[in-house]
Length: 385
Image (cartoon, rainbow, N blue to C red; front, side, top):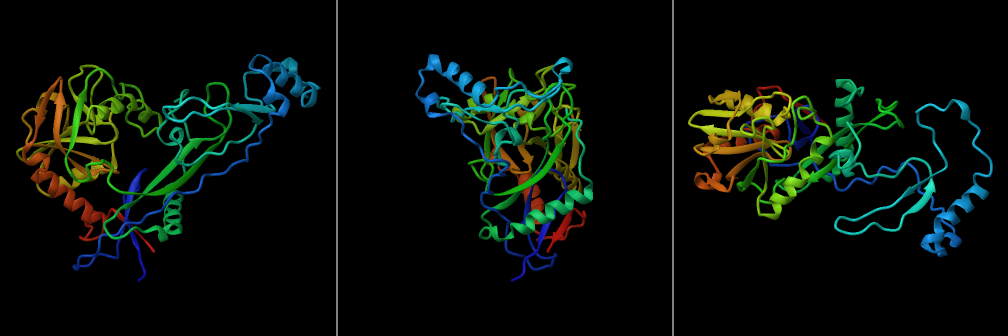
């Protein structure tokens, strides 16, 4: 059976669910998927430490290394203008690398020829900014046409990794990065745009069951004037400490407050937050510290189309106490109901374990749109063949 796919939205980071063109007959719930993508190999590492160096005692090793490479590799000064060195990058001969597994110790490092490194497209530093040194953006971007064609090509090239019906989705991750070398504080001279894909199931371990959040009132995800409203890799590293502590205490994730008043809701670590009271759905307004997620926008449009009143405004944390229901939205979570929220030691649990009528209704509409099971009157989808 020939398969096609419908691409929902054209924003960075989204799920792709396949279908045929809309028909009144419900279709199987299929999802594109790809297993692990092989690492992007840029240059092979070349270990250089000699037997003499390895056998040397720690106190003598530096001297041996210095003697070895001074006499063999750098017996003459590099042929550059030493009298006019500026503060700019100049490639040298070797670099030193060492690695550490999470919770472990650093392994013994090694010298290698200076050059490009081998790195998985899914490396934490590329995707979630888990690295020291950096940030705002000043980067060129591909055109919309280039972006869309790149997504199509990547998806179609990986179409054989479709999981069984209803088992998952293809997560598409576009990545734009400064790949050119720069030493001083300045935009990189070269940029790389790449896309990789990965099969995914539910973002939270609870699956479609309600999640449990804890409000963080000391640590903050973003500050006014910063990059909280931009999908930069550095925004994600900032949440890891609070998120890890929350999960260790049994919570699913962390809900952050604004850093000025410490009173108004901002967002969860990787998704937006919505609060329901009667027929009104409220969500924090976009004001520079909150990511304007494409799923957030889609849910707002769907909710309005379904007859709900939607308010984008400052939402005080106290409003969680008497809300009818609360839910999160995001690329990976889609719509995730919240079963309970703990704030300053007080736990608020929501009716029906958090699976509310509104969140169920919105989840049903958005996922059926993604899978092509209902007509797309919004003209959001792009068909792939």
